[in-house]
Image (cartoon, rainbow over all chains, first blue to last red):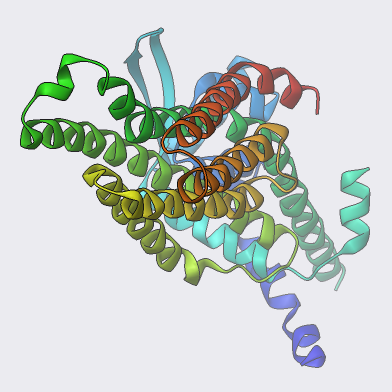
Length: 119
Length: 229
């Protein structure tokens, strides 16, 4: 069982490498946006700014990249508080989110990385 | 050969990046979810008000002189609209909690229990529908006991989903769950041992006030707390 896990370990890493080699997911900010939209389905531009800690122009660039790849759809909606720019995940985006989740699930657990990230 | 080793190290780096990104997302999601639970607390406070308090208050008004069928139809209509709205918000929000939990499980290398999600949804809908129908009849103690029990079941599901969404459960989540369980327990005592309906009404009034307070805190107070994390 343990040996199987050890021998299977490189496979998800290779697959993950392929995912990251795709232009739209080459940036960790875009992966972060995809994870968040995969879970929340729709988020406002302001919420995405808080999530990514990007400048407005930088976030717009990342959203355009994702929209050009067909993973999200950016639109303006009218609310009681005025017009709001929102991003919705598309069907293709959901599929890509599912692939990201699969990769995340299949990654070998690295407790050292856990500690370094949390610290 | 050199290229291979570079490629491998890049993939290792990507795996760390993906995990770190998932954790960064989960930190943000905690504050984001807290605000999104505010409508949940509010709508259930309104629904419980309609279930228990409105009929009690209307009992002192000319409404009590209406024909019985008209009274029941009016109350059942109000219950139906509020229950449907509350259920829609509940299913949406608990789906969100489940997806957040899946990311957390994946980031921590745990097995995710997604297969149980539909079963839990079905159980929630069944508990609420049976309970609201029972409350709608308002004919005897038994129907109110069924209603109390269904709300108790709902509060246990609430704790389950708060755990899935947050880990650890935020302050207002514990308060909401505890007030619901406390109200159901007091309501049982009131129905079985004390004079109905005063204790019953007091217990659920307190829970409603607490839930509205939780909604206000989740919407406005939790924002700063989440940003300080």
